[in-house]
Length: 564
Image (cartoon, rainbow, N blue to C red; front, side, top):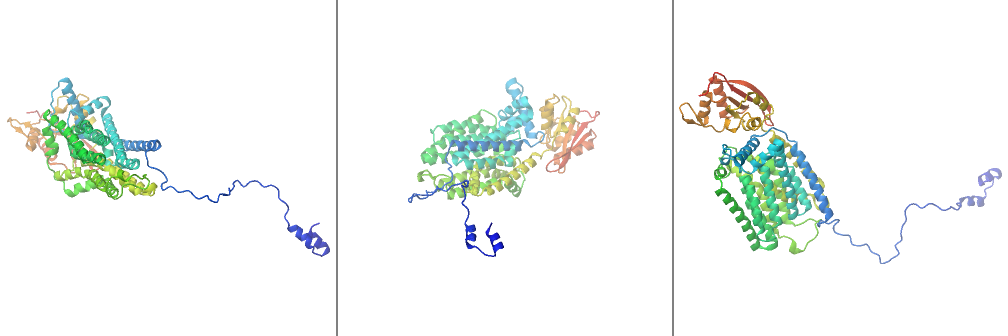
């Protein structure tokens, strides 16, 4: 009976019974809660010193492996973004590859050098065009464009290694990343011209000079052939030889002093100039260098438009390079970089000089084309300077991120912006010229061996149709130059030459690219074909580009119109 029952039956309250109920029963063993507390028994125990840095940026095998994996991912992304671009052969691509085949026939099979390519090409026709033609014979234009991609991937990889030697892995990865997505890099990675090969040779030259700057004083002489080859591939590459020499001297000066720095710079410069001088004396390329580079004709493009295009295509990387130059000059390293002895830290003047040389190089191509007042190939040429400015851009991005990846969102935002600009701008520039995919089959129905044609464009038809044995370079006349001997035996050029040739029915056919803003020559040719009655319009093929619309016209000579 419980206390409650006892009070209910007797009406009395038993305090002892109630008290007994308040005493808890003894509890048996309980399971462990899953954790324990160790009691500190030493009175002299103190908390150890917390390290200043959570990780080290010192070279290590693990750090090297991780950075190489990330670099491989960057190169893969660059390749995919370049290969997404699609279009038929541009006139320069078609011309260079065809010229390479002509040079191979001339050099190895004794065929006459009928093209005169060494008088107006912007690079030696015996270098890149021959290599491109050899690849084209094996795998076609796609293979030649893949060769350009390999050159551009090599340039990005060399840029990473160069920046790593100058700074560290993080700056190197950021520099490679920002360079890999610029429009000029993506464009040249799928474009079969001199530029990709020349740019990769410049990157190789810079890498070799920095790597061997503190070695034997004669080592820069061994690098001179690479620099000379870059200039031979494209003459305008000589614009960056002073940057290479100054970079060599700055790296050598930091370790070896002024005398050795000047010595190495002089050896490299003398070796390069000597090789280029010998090449000029043994070839006929001086006229081409003058017409395409040193004495190039001035255009009419306004300075404002050239500055705008330069800012659009390279302004972001250039701004990051300027930021990197300023911040690197003010402070040598970030918190995650291990402290170094004071003697190992470069002086503020040296850091300013390095940043100025690399960043300032990005302005060379825009400044030169502003001087010439021409926008031709500016979207390609601007990439040369961005290659040299990219290391400082990597430093700028690294400083934006801060120590211990403190502000990764800043770098992500800049990366997304750079990727957006690069993808959209490269796609626009790659779609400027009309696709001849429908034009070439139509021409193949009308072009016969031995016929003379006037064409704009004419390089693409010559490239595609020559493989079928239907035509060759000597049978086509462009809208840029004509030397026509009329009925009276006088050689006519310019508008008079085109007018006389059309009136005489000299051409078997004419290909005309008619867009919203035709040039004076196109307008004259079209008017003459309509008025003379010697030609009929056989086909009109419309096209759309990234900047507008237009159509190709194929005119054929009437059977009754005989040549003069």
